[in-house]
Amino acid sequence: MEHMKNILVIIIAMLLLSSCSTPLQELIYMNGIETGKTYENGPLPEEYRIRPSDQLFIQVISDNPANVAFLNLLNTGRTSGSFGSSTSSLELITYLVDDDGYISYPELGNIQVEGKTVSEVRDIIQSEVDNYLESASVFVKLVNRNITVLGEVQQPGQKLMVKNQLTIFEALGAAGDITDYGNRLNVKLIRELPDGKHVAELDLTNPEVIYSPYYYVLPRDIVYVEHSTKVYGAKNLPYSAPLSITASVISIGLLILNLFGK
Image (cartoon, rainbow, N blue to C red; front, side, top):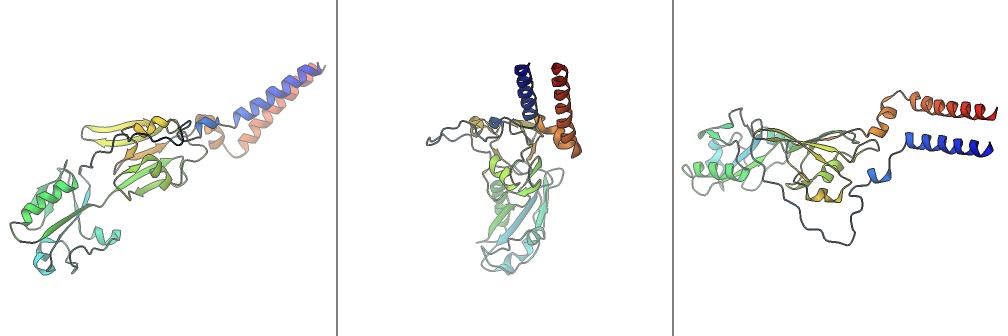
C-alpha cells in the first residue's frame, strides 16, 4: 500500500510539472546548431519593389541649390549630401505612391514607380532631370521602411528597419524578443506579393531556418508570434486560475490516496 501511495505522489508531481512547463528544446533558438562551424549563406532577400501607399523621399541636389529648387517639394537650402535625418523632416518632402502606382512630381508630371526598385526610380527621375539641368543628382529613399511585430513579444508594434538585410532574429530582437509564452516552432510571417498576401511559417528552433527564403524580412512584413499551446490557458485565464487548477489536481490526488488508505 505504501508503494502505491509513492507511485501516486510521483504521478501527481509529474502532472503538475507538465501542466506548467514547456520542453527546453521548444525554447532554444536553432536548437542543436553546431558551434565552430561556418554555414553557407542562405538566399539573400530580393531588392524591395515599390508598392502603392509607399512613401518616397526624393531630392534633387546640386552645387547651387537655387538651380534645383523648382524640382523639390521643399527648398532645404542645403548642399549636396547634407540632409536632415529626422522622420518629421522627411515627411515634409515625401511623395506618396497612389493606388495606380504613380507619384505626382512637380514639373515632371506623373511617374509610374510601382514594381520598381528604389535605384530604378532614381534612374528614371535622373533621366528626366537631365533634360532640365546639368550636374544635378537625384537622391531617392524609401521612407516607410517599417515592419510590424505582433503577438507574444516583449514590445509589439511597428519597428524601423535600420538596414537592408534584416534577419527574423534581428526583427524579434527589436521587439524585445519572444516571451516565455511564445511559440517559437511556428512563427508566422505575412508578406505582400504582387498576386496577394503570402503567409510563411518559420521554426526558429530549427538550425535550417537560416536557409529559409523568409529568414530576411522586408519592409511592410508582419511577424506574428503565436501563444504556445501548453501555456495558452494558464496565461489567459484569471490569475487565480492556475492556483485553482493546481489545487484541483492535489485534491483529486489526496482523494485517491484516501480511498487506497481505507
